[in-house]
Image (cartoon, rainbow, N blue to C red; front, top):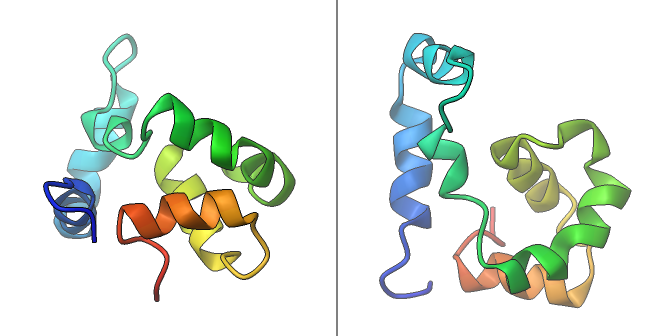
Length: 94
């Protein structure tokens, strides 16, 4: 796991967040959803997974949480570079 990473904490927050609050956060136009923004990664991380996201997770885009879940569920088929990004943030394993 990447030390200092907020991904595990953010994942816990997403799992624990009430669905009504999550829906309200998504429903406010013009205001970014901070939960989704935590999962964007660096520009290099995004570039490493862009092709895999388009190939395996097109239906999940642009929702970063759904893309992350999709990449995790396809972890044996994604590129080595993208798999390394998931590993970097402790998101590769089950």
